[in-house]
Length: 610
Image (cartoon, one colour):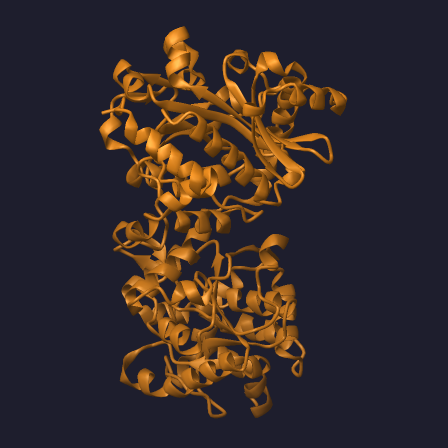
């Protein structure tokens, strides 16, 4: 082999040369045979087909093209990569080389100022060296000493505002007996150190897949055997499509909440591996678009003059709140037949937009005739913005028994529960039409309407009703929400008094890469669940707005039911005890003086509920 040939094949030879660092695994006389068995010679052939003087990003792109490897990244994911400013991009390490090349090509489409911390084996490729910060992944005293300079270099790069790519495992995913699966080994404490010293936010990235059985068995014999097989693992990805999932940027303020290195590492690992729960977008679209027959067309809206006439005919006491162009009124169906027709049309329109709906031309039922209706009206545009359905339990049960409650179609109620709920309002069928959903103001005004209704009817202490988790969410997102609510937000004193008509399986969701002991403490907070759900959903939506609202009021779960008649939504029956709700929350909706009147009236009458 000539000197020129050695230099050309240098990245893929077992013998260190030209100043290369690292162990020599084989004696020289066996070099040729070993390089052939390990795939190094085929890697060298591939390497010689790539321009010797190309830039690092061009090298990565050419290598992927020669291998026939494509990368699947959702456009909504790609925009999560910050275009400027310091950032630590972390990723799991399932393959050993191809994911590094994929990130080179992906990040370069967004910004040029990035570097990758990589082991010295990858750094042996001359074309990549300008973009790499080389570290020793093999551990030990020598690694600790030699890695000090790279860590300083990485920290300086972040402080200059650059993006740093980091594989916290330091080595390739392998069989982990503690987690009974192939995942990254324990992540390096270097990651929390970089986070704290740099103050940079963190972007989690997840690669789906793993190396095969040969790689895993070799590693169980000796970890260095896995390293020797990495060239073959690179070659066997030929023709593959890599699925890359990108989470939301974890801000510095969130990272600073973790007190210990261990807690921060666990959290970032959770944010990374939870991305593996996301279902493929193609499957999601296929499921979403499949219907046995198209739903009927919605009718045309009635003339707005009819709506205004019905609103004007309401008594002054039924005009609850006015703010700017909006007003909130409460009425019965007999007082507003045209309004009810439009509410039914807008309900169906709004619910269809999120994968729900009755499938009928109007969303109206018999309960609409006996319930009261809270209506948000735009006085300038002369149109309905949103609505709520309110059912006073004492009146409805007295007139019709348990069958007078809409929720009784979803849940079985024992008599003891209905006795406890005599001073409760059932809330449901709420909506804000799509063009108004970009603002929180409509929902706030509807709840101010509910607050004023309570001030006028202070005998009601409880609010309860179904909160929908639509099939527009992926299965993993729905399981995350339901399992967390069932474990940590259940009203234990009502256990056995409420049961679903069609139960929802409530199995805890296993996240690969984390044992239950690690993940459980991080999955108690619904705000954290909302963040994970946003990572899993292509449109970045968190938990449903109404569910978040009930929880902020101190809401607790009674049960879950699956509703096949309403596009297979999961209905969580939520209960709010207004005596347990924070005063500032109630004042926000009732007003300071209204809140005082509500309290005075409540204190002056004996409680009807144990």
